[in-house]
Each structure stands twice: as C-alpha cells, then as structure tokens.
Image (cartoon, rainbow, N blue to C red; front, side):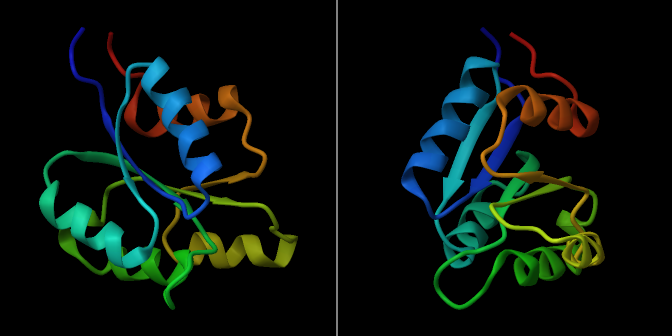
Length: 130
C-alpha cells in the first residue's frame, strides 16, 4: 500500500478524533492529529511539506479557536492553498459567512457522516490512493 494524502485533524474530543482517524485511514489517507491550536502549529511546522488538507474543529480549548487559527494559517504562505474543512456541532446561517471569511474552504456539521467527509476531501485533495 502506498502512502496516502496527509490530513491534519485538529479536534479536542478524543472520540471524534478517533472516528475521523478511522474513517480516513480505512480510506488510505495518512493522518496527523492535534488537540489544540498550539499543538496544531507544532505539527504543521514539522510536516510543512506533507499536509494536504486540514480538518478543523471550530471550538478548541486553550484560548485560540478554530476560526482564529484558520485566519492565522491563511496569512502564512505555506498554508494559503491547503484546504481547510471546518467542523462544528453548531453552525447557524449567519455563522457560515464567518467560516468562509476566516479562510475555510468547506464546512461539515457534527455528527459527521463518513461519506460526506470523504466526498469533501476528494473535492480538494482527491481520493487517497491504495
């Protein structure tokens, strides 16, 4: 099996992280994970050439939320073109504009349906190769 596209999962909930990792690895994506924006920055510094997409929970612990992280990443040349898929349990119509204004490419609502996650990733990074 060849190595698939790399997806960074930034999610503070252990169960959600495990679910996303399981869905992605079963579909031949390689997975990196972080629980906070601070940890995500460290992963991104280490894997700058490898991350093909970012799965980003909008409610993160530790002071910096997902929208703030997305805005910050879009200001850095290395991350300007990497797809960011926002994930949240609550998103109201008036909030969707904030998600896209922050630089996210797409949004998925929790609970995330596996097929929806794979479909949106295939739009931005293609299907991972087995």
